[in-house]
Length: 577
Ligand SMILES: [Fe+2]
Image 1 (tube, rainbow, N blue to C red):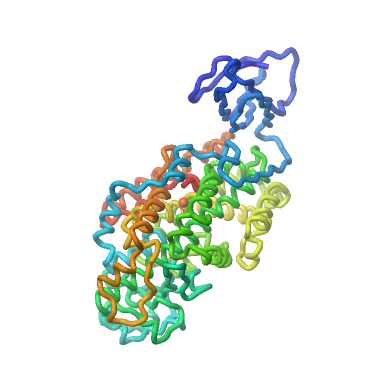
Image 2: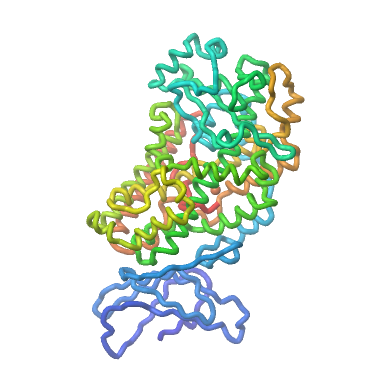
């Protein structure tokens, strides 16, 4: 066998001539092995092989994808890229160090989790929000284009446990009538936050010193297309000790009500829409891909770059954030014994259609609400991803029976359903198998969208919106007010978390939204796809993404507040932080 004698660090393409006395026939596999770097065998001499490309004497090119770290005294066999392979990998890990080298993250990132840092200065966005956090219009803006654009629904009927009356909100409706405004909801003028996971298991939960409200909030779209809150109830059950707060109340009654909504949003955002619906789902998809699909499988080749670093970041997050002594457990209002219960309820609230953005937007009645840039950019990116996946799948599968008979693919989705914690969601529409190519295309689009676009939407602005604690408090130290007219500035300051809790929360959101030094945008790496047609599709997809990048930049120039989180250049390829 050929031997590589001179091999230094860095990226290399090495060409070797291999002579062979007789014709080998179809090349099935290559074997790579390495020996320790004697006599200095204690030195780290591992190397990473991306692929082996063999040009045969007949001029054919044969690809052997590797993407493996190779260390001393190891012998690894890699099959040819169009071959078939049946195998199940078993992964078991309790800590990041147990993970295979191929899924490990930069050590610098790991060290950040070990030693969280507090930033020395705010981002420009954060500084802007610091001066605007009390404004009703900014409160409404964040429900559309902030960290958590997932809570708001169109209001076609007031929730029964939210008895807002005409007299209460008359002053906020620009001379309009409440009932009439709800009736004309097709125009999208009345919106509500009423479906929260918090509300599913408790009206109020608290740790020893922290409190969490389960609020309902009514919002109105003004004639100037500005979304403003017009009524807030902090607990689910209406009653005398649960007043409906209004913009016409005293400054601190109204402000404190909004602060409790923002604190509840911290819980919904971090645990449900960020951790569960992007990080943990990405892990389910990644694990099933590693366990069920061989490297040469088209779906493996399509997806694997979208799972870069996910297993490690989730292992670190479980240790640093939601373990017994994790930052969220110890510091957040939702931390403590209620946290796991919250997560279970969050899983129970999951549906397939809520993961598919076009369906989710319609289900929430948000098709026409103006200035909703998360929807505008997200739907465009969904469409771009969908068209790309459709063409790639069309290249590998010719008809529905190809999909039905691909037992590796069927095992992949079966494992996602049965072992990914989704078995309990029989009602939720998650597929257990694929019969049609269109079903496969939709599911793969959802997977790629969830781990790249949706994660970027709920991840990247964490320090922008959460760096100024009053705008996104991790915890509150006083219970929600039960009467009006009692709150002062002093009440508000006593309600905010103490300095330690605040600093821990700021360090967490800073860590979670700081871009990696080896960041790759969502259109960049599909490096396991070798064949000419998929490569052409990748290049076209990259061009489309880059063009949309410019379009968003152009759009943002005219906006008072740029929405940059779904700019394709800012959307990472995988859940990697
Ligand atoms: Fe994240």
